Image (cartoon, rainbow, N blue to C red):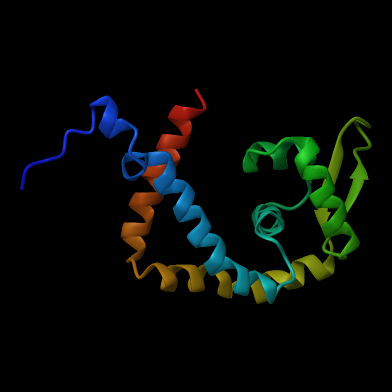
Length: 150
């Protein structure tokens, strides 16, 4: 079968040829799959990501969380306030540098990890892909992100 030339101006302007739209629409599909899983935890997807990063390494600064999640402090701070109100984290000023706010898991936040362990399995099952395929795709998308953030 002949390949379609996607370099002509007319072809470039077709939605089906937009890489960004494929990723954007895949993100919406992920949101639909994640929602019922995260509803059981009473978390939004961004809140879940914060918790995952803290489960990987507790006691981090707001800045380090933002770097890891590609989020600005102004986006992250309201989310952290909600997680704190829910009893999952605590926020305290760093004793060595009062400009820094440290974020730590509470016992409740640590306990939530066990309940959340079903989420990744649910996502893997929803894709119908093998773990190796998922790993390759994740690497390609992460490489694309790196190129775009240069």
